[in-house]
Amino acid sequence: MKLGVSLPVREMKDDLGAIRAFAELADDLGYAHLRVPDMIIRPNGGHLHEPMMLFAWLAAYTKRIELCPSVIVLPMRQTAHFAKQIAQLDVLSNGRARLGVGIGSSPEQFEALGEDFHTRGARCDEQLDLLRQLLTQDTVDFTGRWHRIDNLGICPRPVRAHLPIWYGGASVPSDPVVRRIGRYADGWFVLCSPEDYPGVRSRIDAAAAQAGRDPQDIQTEAGVAVVGPREDEWQDRVANWRETGLDYVCLRTLGGDLTSQQHLDKLEEVTPTARALAGLD
Image 1 (cartoon, rainbow, N blue to C red):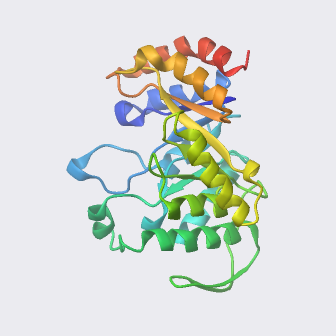
Image 2 (image 1 turned 90 degrees about the horizontal axis):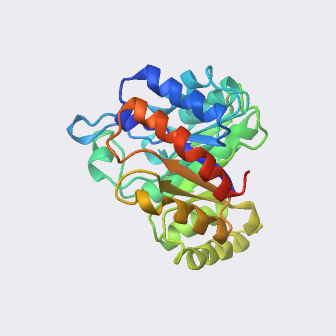
């Protein structure tokens, strides 16, 4: 099982030196990936950096670690424009981009951006189909309900021939979400409990098989907080997820009201134990 880590931008805010230091430390410690959440427009002025811009900047300071915006609320974004952005991030990072997407849950944010909240799932399906074509083909001919492209494409395209696209949804995903993961996703961000995981996984496997895909091609990742109310449980949770056969666990230093330096210290503190629990050492 591989280990990733969430970049604590919500708490580091505009301490860009600490954000860079955290990313470089995670890279040096051998973490597989960094995750940053997405929110274009927020209630009450809440602080959150734009993930694509942030990762483009961090690509210059890191060497090996994968950069994973997750999850991008895809129906809030124009598809071809976003395809250009994620392809550019993969180029700037020399093939280290991994994309997480979802459909969002806030009607107010969709309204503020002039997008239809009620068609977001169907639009996301169409976007995922078009996005994959734009990332892999020189030119695309596509006609859908919301998109029409005639013999056009983006350049540059990603370094990797198949840039991974993962999907995130509710803790117990609905049938449309399960079908979306089964048909389109290279991976699934797991939000359910280890007890519920086998049942949800079996639904996704069935959806993948129905779509003509090998269910084993869909990887999995769960998050584990190493601070906050469940701090005493984090080691057991990592061990339990490893037993389920998960591909990744993403550690989080968020939620404990840490200072920037304390985030860095906590990451160094937990890494040796986390690596041992994951079977990496």
